Image (tube, rainbow, N blue to C red; front, side, top):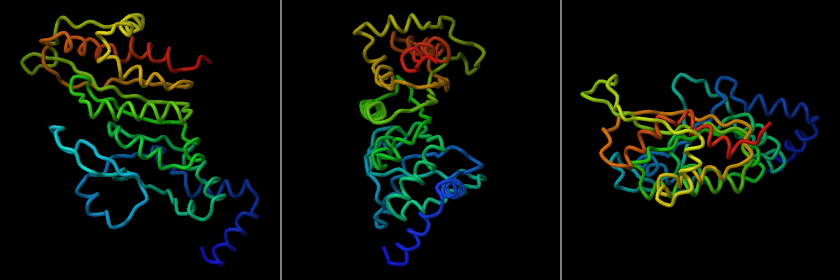
Length: 274
């Protein structure tokens, strides 16, 4: 850092704290969109940008539609079409004190949305300073469908949940859960007649059985995140085949219970009573 830059930083730090805070908010608060969307960068784009030597964790992810090939990549910030993003993060590089002060504004003012790119959660959070990490209070994530979850996905989910539960204190979590609704002859109105729902007590009971370990393992992992003030659970339903196995029947019944019995069960484990 040049002597001139150091002098400018010192002059800025002599500005009263409340004025510095207002400046940070003008630079780092996106007044049009309070959600920061972090996703896994397409492997082809990542390969083309390798020479930039970005200081980000790299990781491997399932890179094709059939989920059969892995590729190296990193995370990136999604810019939404038509949304005027007015965040100017270059001030974070001024010096350590300014970084600590400004990062609190940046990370506390926004919700961090990872969609279903669970593999990007751990690397992104791991790259943050302790001050920045402790400032994040709101997060959105999406759990992929149970029948289509592979060992790679389970590992990514386990790592993300463990890091959050051990290193952060979230206040709000918006959890989307992918589920399935079977239909007949392509008509959504003709639902599978044997569908039923589970209550909070049913989920508490099911979690005790060893034979349900595979279906409920991911629930135990996210339930390790404690002390939330707000937990919103939303079902993201897609078409699925008519159940022909006990596992698929459980998935359909689970899907019908996501926003009721399952949401109540998770809240009893993760939310601190007011």
